[in-house]
Image 1 (cartoon, one colour):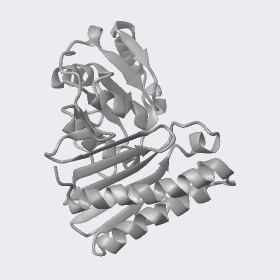
Image 2 (tube, helix red, strand yellow):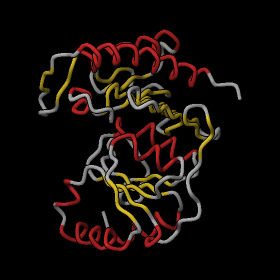
Image 3 (cartoon, rainbow, N blue to C red):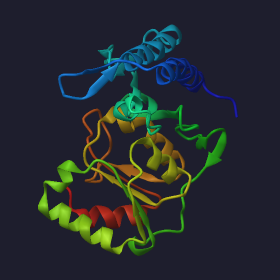
Image 4 (tube, rainbow, N blue to C red):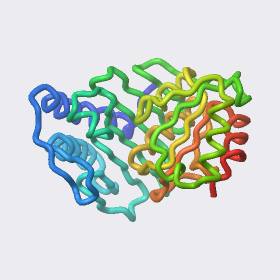
Length: 259
């Protein structure tokens, strides 16, 4: 299948970012602390600049929302959402669970996503209506798991959920019931969900730049991906409920009672 110009740009941008990331991963880099007390490195900034350069060259009128370089032309029909190194804490500690996230919105709808784990050896991508792929092979969610007691659940950041006693107790009940619980986190558990290796994911503290690309990939793999209340994603989304089947997703949403 012929890649669209948008996907070709995303792949080229991911390649450019990967060169920067690999250089600093191998040679080391100083770490600074941002105003929100999260780490940032030259690798973050330079890899985002590399991505922006590729996209701007091909689509100069598109909007851009980057984790490190901010927003520009956000009133454009097309807006790229970029997190050059999602998992900077892992990156600086030489832990391979970090990735580059590249997504494209068209008139507020997510239509393309690419997730690249350069040290992990996985690159996933998807475009609306074209299916999902991992390292060039088409992937799909597991469609046979519709009940909680048969499901494998992975959790990520849960601080906000833990602060709400009703939801935390509900999650505890789910944890006690599911077949298996893991905490793969970051990009990786979404790759696992999209290829049918796990069945559902709960996170309560994310940024849209962390999950926009992954949402497209999971959906194109046949899964359901919303916020914890079952709502559509937008630039302010901060939670995730994702599942391989709509039945499992609906049950988890009802039981968690997030609103």
